[in-house]
Image (cartoon, rainbow, N blue to C red; front, top):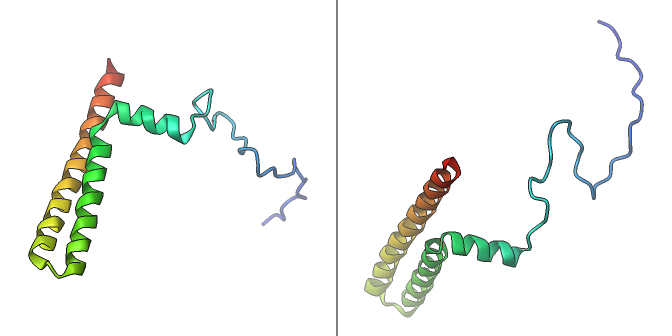
Length: 106
């Protein structure tokens, strides 16, 4: 087995810059979107997802409040409502992905 040759030092590693990989561009967008702009864009694209997320969070919060107060029947009802809201959210995400895929094919 042959011994490896000497290693020549390349350019120093620059953590603030993305790595250079031949044939790969780290960003497909020419401009970077802020979180607020991206959130508003995605909400306008599929408004049912944030509605489902808010419904899930509300059912969970109220269910935990009822559990803390000792209202076990209402707490169980809210946990079932939370599951339904999560199902609604997942369905909205999947339908949004399907719509986006159909739109990109056209």
